[in-house]
Each structure stands twice: as structure tokens, then as C-alpha cells.
Length: 243
Image 1: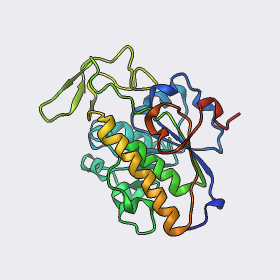
Image 2: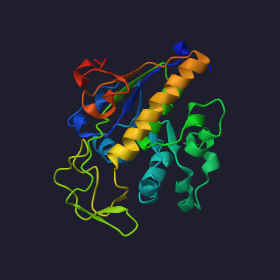
Image 3: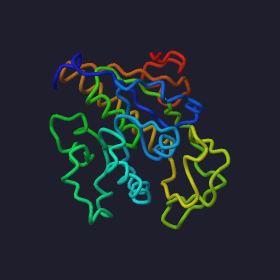
């Protein structure tokens, strides 16, 4: 692995309620940011996009592939990390023309990537691991993990997939209330069994990397909720090193 001091610091943006009213435009043009999943709806509204976009949720990808494809075509972000499952709906989309699109499945097969040890994951932990792969220091924000598993505005299908039946006026799980909209399909959050386990394993991957390669990637969490604070050094959002 290459030395980390030649790499930039990276800000990884979760979608938790703790980022409600946060001004994303505080990030300068030279700041490397990574955002996830359906937050693109808010980015479009404020005319700001992160440097990289990450979404490896097969259900969310399938039901939002047109919007994601448009982001790629319009070059809204400099790079996109996705699951190959999205290509099932891309019959007329030549992915070879888009060298800025990367796939999780390929990274997991790369022996020189941190992703080679990935087992349990969610889009947030993948975004954070991607940040660790490209950055000298990683700043985490908005990863709350205190999901309301079933909000009143959803119904559960027989296969366990959840569907938004009406756009929530207030969504307790996300920083913007229209993050989820009527008709959206998504997986049950499973905050404790899936998300928390993903972050725990991310920390183990970083510990393994430090032990084996003597490479330490500093990670700072700016969310004092219980969530991921048990795995990473934690400060408050007010301590975020931005102007």
C-alpha cells in the first residue's frame, strides 16, 4: 500500500437526521467529499454535488437507476461507486465510455484494495472504506444508526422490501424529509444487525491494515450519538474542521 501522506483528507457524508439543516456548500471546490444513496435529491435542490457518489444497495439502485444514470451522463460527480446489479437495466448504456464508474464487485477482487476483506457492508460503510482507500484522513458525519425501522408512511411487501406509500412530512431517519418519496422501494434498515455490524467490521479491516502493513488511516467521527462512536474517535459536528 502506498503512503497516505500524499493523499487528501476526505469527508464522508451520511444521511442521518443529525445533518438536518447542514450547509453542504461549506465544502470548498477542492474538498474531497463522498455522498450516498438518495441524498442526490437534496443535492439537486441546492445545486451542489459531492466529489464521489456511492450506492451499493441493490433495491435502491434498481428503483432509481434512471436518476443515477443521468448523474453519470451529466457528470454531476467526478466518480461513482456502485454495485453491478444496476447494469441489469442498462442495456443501452455503454459503461465502457464512463471510466469514472467503479463497481464494488471489482474492488473486492483487487488484492491491493482495502475492499478485499469486505464481508458485511452497507452503502455508508462502503463510502467510508472508499474514503480510507483514497484519503490520508477520513472525516465521518451523519451516520446516526438510530433508524425507525418501519415509519408510518411505508408498507412491507411479502419479500420484505419496504415501499413508501406517501412522502413523509417528517422523516425521522434522514436529514431531509423528502429523502424518501412515494413509490420508493428500499430494504428495512436493520440498523443493529446490518449497519452496526458493517461499521464494526470496517474498524476491524482498518486494524488489520495497520497491523499488517503498518499503515494507519486516521478516522474521525463527528456524531456523538452511540451509533459508530464506539468504533472511532468522536467529536461534535461543531468541531468539523471547515471554515
